[in-house]
Length: 395
Ligand code: PMP
Image (cartoon, rainbow, N blue to C red; front, side, top):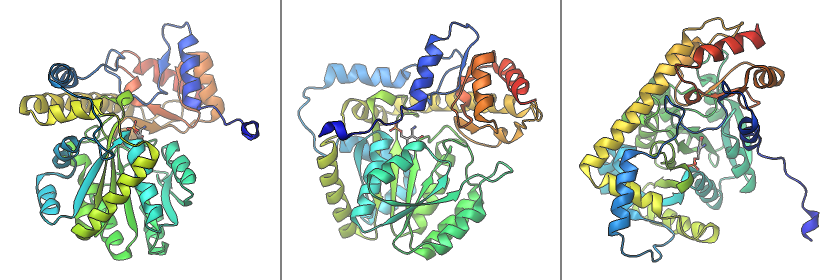
C-alpha cells in the first residue's frame, strides 16, 4: 500500500541550507532562510523571552492538558497588540471576536482555510507570488485556487489586479491577503489602498482571510496592522491568522493564533466550536511553552516594553539594510531603489535561476531560486560585496 506513494520534491530552502553549511568560504552570505538575523548574523532568543521562560520554569506548577484552544490568556493578552485597544474593546463588547492558539502562523492559516471550507467556501483567491505554503495548504484542504498578480512592475502592489478579482469574485469566495511585510516580495498595500480594499470587500461579501506573520517588522506594530484593522472594522466577517514566530523570535516553538470576527456573538461561538473540533482532529492542542512565554511577557508591563524595544531594534536594522540597498539604482542593471519603500524581511530580485546559481557558485551568495532574498541576512559588513556580486552576474 504505502509503496504507492510517489517521491515529493525536497524543500528547496532546506536543501540550500545544506549547501550553505558545506561551503568553506568565510565570505559566504546566507540570504535564503527566512529568519531574522542581527548585525552579527545571529538569531538570538529575545531578552524578554528568556526572562519569561525563567519565570515559567520557576512558577509553572503543571503541564496538564489545556484544550484545543490552547492558552486563552495568551490569546486574549495578544489581542490588543494585534487589533489595537479601541477595536479590541469594540469587538469584544459586541461579542464579535474570539480567538484560539495555533501551532504557529501555519496552523492558523491551516485552520482559517479549513474553517472557510467547512462554511462552504469553495474558492480562495490569492496574490502570486506568495509564501509557498499558502498554495500547499489550499491544495491540501481541497480548495479551488484563483490567483492574481500581487506586485506590479514598478515595485508597488498591483491594485488593479486585486480590484478585478474582488469585482468578479463569487459571494461564496474568500480572498487571502498578507497583512504586512509581504513574503516573498516585500510589496505591501499603502494605507489608501487598504482603505479602498476594505470598501470593496465590504460591498462584495467576499470573506477576507488575513495572514499577519511579521507585525512590527515593517513600519511599526500599529502601522503594520493598519490594513488588517481597517478591513476588520469595515466587514462583517473575517479570519486573521497571526504568527508570533518572527516578532517574538520563537520560530521552532510554533506560536500563533487564529482570530475570528463574526456578525454577532452567536456566529462567533459557532465559528470557535468548529475551530476547536478542527484543531482536535488535526493537532489536538497547540504546543504550550512558547505561547505561555508570550503570555508572561504581555501580562507584565516591563517585559512588554522590553519586547517592543527588541522588535523596534529589528525593524530599524531591516530599515537600515533596505536603505543601503536602495542607494544602488544600477547594480549591474538591477535597480534596487524599490527595496527602500518595500517592507519586512523579504524582497524579490529580478534574477534568473542561472544568475542565482552563479551568485552561489562564484560569490558564495545563497538565495532562493525564485530570486527572493532575506534582507536581514545582510550586514553593513557584507552589503557592498553582495551588491558587487549582483552587479557581476547581472551586468
Ligand atoms: N505566513 C507567512 C506569509 C509566512 O511567511 C510565514 C512564515 N514563513 C507564516 C505564515 C507562518 O509562520 P510560522 O508557522 O512559522 O509561525
